[in-house]
Length: 618
Image: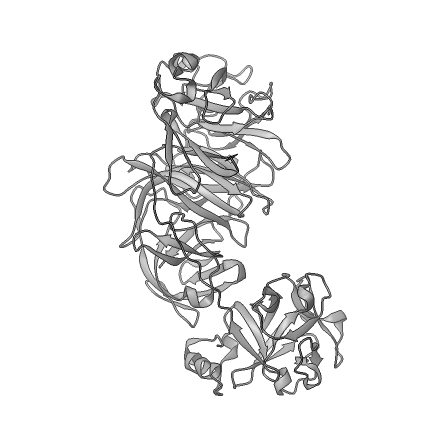
């Protein structure tokens, strides 16, 4: 079947069964296609599945391989690029040759005229592929119908060897076996994954010395809870083990913990707490041989709130508008194996320290470290740095707002090419300059999600204090956070959503909670059509849930319903939606489990150029 605008949908259907009717080829939607030759009934193929520059383009019987799939993209002025899904390289007339018989190859995309093609409507369900540079058409040479026959260019005459049908790719849909969830309440969950008996196990550590574990990110088992001597993390002796910190604040309370494995194989547990009414806080470290403890205190590393006294910065009296509240630590390794700790809450903002991977403590002489974000008591906390191999960036995830159900917690991200910054948002703002009250900070950072309510579906209030983990075996990233819920008071629970990186190297978050799938998570043009509930997260620190509205993604590439616009999808689930009056959003489509309808559904998550997120779910 060929894919064009609505006024020719019936024509496309007729063409797919061999009837010739006019088509409006000028309206081809960006998408992933198989290019089938009319004369031979064989498809365009990269010879030998090569990924090399200069590899020959041939025809071959259809096998369903990615070397026979092509991403077609409108590059403006009536011309398109045609890029192999397998190699990521572009269809090109080789060596700027304008002669008949010149070879067509693949080459790294650079956007020159030898790589741009006019899709000429032949009004019979087929198109001619005419090169911008040479003015000549892609042709199966010499009326050859054999596998492996060469495709070159020839003076355009529109005969059957030069006619190509554009057939949208159709993938097999995944399935799901396990739809059972076992939830757990761990406030401020920080994730760390370890391999136990050959099985990857995800641990989360949070406030009040709570922790839990899971092997599937769906079903959680509690490991510990409570700041008392019934807690196994500290050998049932937490009162004495962490007395130094309790004495500093005068409270036997613990906040958002973090765990990492040290260079010596031991695990470091970072404990911390601050008074609610002032930034008198601390962070310390305890170590143990098992991720489940027992942990033994190695002492406090940082303190804050020493009124009228010298701070951790030598010679500076503590000032809560510029110095941090020494809580909410997250310790991580950069791509070169160097250890860092990011921390801070409200007060003077978010800071980072270089760490000693042997002791789990800061390298001496840094004081509070380097300032990254916030100040003047900005409502920003819970920083977590995420990195994955295919991206050149470090992503700093933070929570804006307050943690209560009506506090407006929302999850934002900024990125940097170095772990210690500077970090920038989608508009290029240096986050080190973001400070002040809620109105002052709300426009900054890429807001990934806030309070929301899907009609006839789930809702969140104040999702936040997030962490993230990358599974290098499945190449998946996951966002783990706690959230409250509409009409549920201050009850909170952990949720896990899959994360992706869009075409502009920004993180985006799947709209439905994570559930493991059977088969590949591939979405095609046919899958995406239908009725969606759309959430516009906007940029505010919203204290109430943003409600979804209904939109329709139509077969002709249009969007109708509450918003009008257009959409398309290409290989790798690359998705774009344009909403009139709102702009263009680049993101990822995926299959997700809708726990409300108990069905696998297609979804999309996408960002605008200013860092506004939209979600859509069937």
